[in-house]
Length: 216
Ligand SMILES: Nc1ncnc2c1ncn2[C@@H]1O[C@H](COP(=O)(O)OP(=O)(O)O)[C@@H](O)[C@H]1O
Ligand SMILES: [Mg+2]
Image (tube, rainbow, N blue to C red; front, side):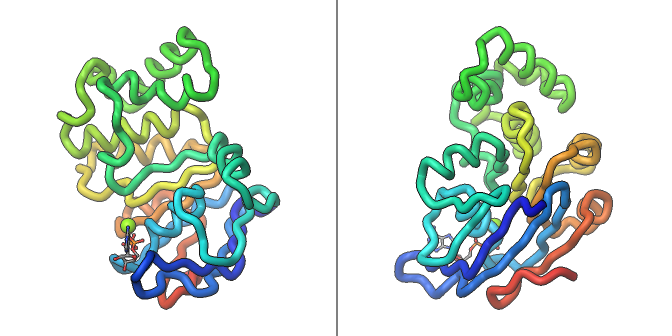
């Protein structure tokens, strides 16, 4: 079954040259897709469109076979989707690490007690328990990356969109991320220039050039 289907998607930023002109894309359930493309080719823009954080000029997006049209449709789809922003500073905004990781859970109506249990468990997985009381803003880049991933994964999403998850991150942290993702059973779309990471994880590879997403 298809997880993501994008048909004839067109998008420009206001006053900019076009980013997408009739982009088509299909990702099946369980696929682990890696997208490698030059800077400025639209990888981050694509993720923002898939999350409904930007609005296409035309074309359609469907997720799990359902056409996503309204803000409400996107809100519902986002409940099953985990999106890692390229820049962790766009992701982290609460005064402590533990509050940040718990945010999406509490937002989904999970009880405080259950949220604490889940936050503790994911912190252990990512070896960031010692950071729980820290201010996210003060962490190192790699620590911020792990904390933002923990916040994305704690809700157990069915679909993960990861925008350059290993950029600026050392090998030890990359291995922690890899260990987790290798056991992840859902669908993953990753934009990355990290060949080792993509080789270990992905079941399919794509390039994004001249408005076309092509399998390679
Ligand atoms: N907020 C924005 N406003 C205007 N132009 C933007 C904005 N964000 C990105 N762009 C432009 O859109 C194009 C695609 O950018 P982006 O999606 O960030 O590419 P990538 O993630 O592949 O590096 C680039 O030409 C970039 O300069
Ligand atoms: Mg980008």
